[in-house]
Length: 357
Image (tube, rainbow, N blue to C red; front, side, top):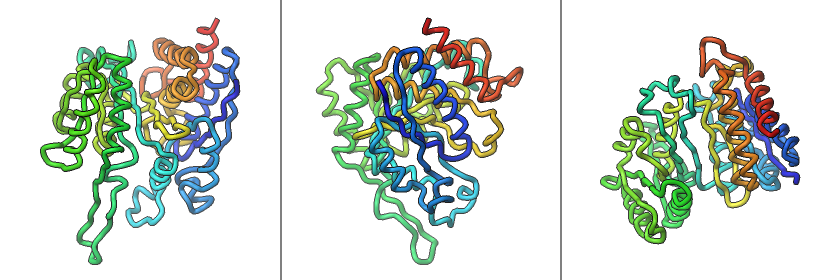
């Protein structure tokens, strides 16, 4: 079967890691009898340069007519260092989430055998970590109105807003994940201070009654930030609001030792989007040193969640694990004898072929 995939390489190292994911997908298709059609669209700083819009309508239409979206990264220093910029790459990301109804970000955080030593945490803490972090993606302070600055520029304000419906759909998603895993959901909030968090807690308590096999616990975000580092293996599925999820999921990425290792899926009302959790890392752009694993594993998530190709997704995951076990890794994972982005991608392709025999 043929699957239509929108490719949004974006900025910085995005094009380099996307290229490796496409190579792995094509090899996986060859050995399993599937084909993938890729159409590229512009997003982020590169789109601003060409169109003045960080998420052009042409890219939106491409995403809507595709079966899934594979996304690289967004961001450029000339915007990061200019707070007065009226048009910013990140605006394209927010518009993309809003227009495509990408309401939940799913980030697995799992320790990989043989890689515990690269984490800044002790190996005994890292061992056994297997968390799915689910972040609400289209509500909260990032989308709330009103927002802005006072006329004199001395005061700024943002509004955090959530509806019951927004909370319900993401909590239900977390519960469905937990049913297939270790049957535990941790809802992270700040209900002792925030009205929106009290809505989250009230709604989650009602929803969990529909899942009698699930244990649900509630944890304030400051405590959760500490416990994720102290005892990550205590968590199964974490569900939280937009800003808390943004911060906690990046914090959890240190468990694996590198931002470049972690994939994610943004679940949409139609097509879903898959991307590594790292940013555009402009300092490494063009140097062929970026870790492609997060993007390649995001492609594996795409096969499983959007196309139902569970075995094919598992084949890619095993190929990644074997490649890492061999020590064929980029500089973020080893300073002793690192390989290039291209070389790591090539070895993963070879492992896909070997494991399919």
